Image (cartoon, helix red, strand yellow):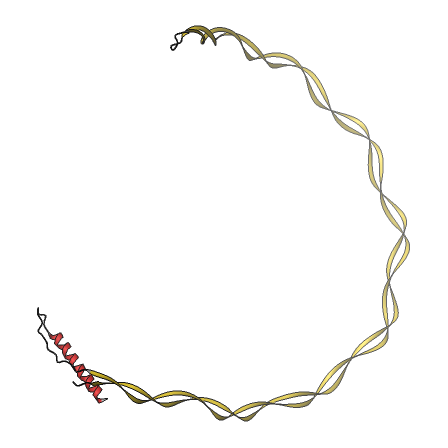
Amino acid sequence: MKRLLLIGSVLAMLVAGGDAQAFGRKKDCCPAPVCYAPAPACAVTYVEQVVTTYKTEIRERDVTYKVLTPVTVKKTFKEDYCVVEPKYKDEMRDVTTYKMVSHDEMRDVTTYKMVSHDEMRDVTTYKMVGKEEMRDVTTYKMVGTEVVRDVVSCHYVPCTVVDPCTGCCRTVCQPVTTVQKVKCMVYECKPFTEKVKVMVYECKPFTEKVKVTVHECKPVTEKVKVTVQECKPVTEKVKVRVCEYVTKKMSRNVDYYECSYKEEEKKGKERYCVTVPVKTVIKVPCYVPCCN
């Protein structure tokens, strides 16, 4: 182990020295040559070494703990209470009922009757009365006027034509337009006013005395025998059953349960964790220099 530490420190010093020389060197075109002594060759061997590790184990142990156990005790107490009981008995009571009683009465009854009589009344009627009057009446008549107008007409005229291809002559009809003077009648609607005798009717009122029959509704009162229904009270003794409630005091025993807790000790198993050291053998590399 000491050899390994010595070799490691020597290598660290050599590397540190080389780096320091390289850091302090100036930038020259040709660096100065450095000569290093060749390092001796090393061999690696493994040495067994005992180390201590720790692991966790779960163990059990006997423990004593306390438990509260419920205990139920039955108890009894006396309770007073009241009971309402019905009590029936017969009684004679006055009961009023209503009955319909009918009797005859003479009453005044008013009725309405239609009474008719004749009267002379003024009646106005309207009649149509006609009379003759002279009135201006305008009529329209068609008046004709002779007018000369130009009329264009078209007719065909035969003419001789030479065919340019064959040189033959042929007769064809060509349309010719001509204008002719033609007389025609033009009619115009013109008004003419003249006096005409017409019959004019007018609606005029005429009043005259006319005998008419008038109907009138008049009240008539007379004595009539009618049957009247009247509701009268009737009281009588009736036997009825009456219920009365009587309060009665009573007592009874009531059971109830009282719960309490009792402390008891019990034994059981308890799990817990323990860290235990363990010896382990491992192999450690060891560098040993080789001599030529």
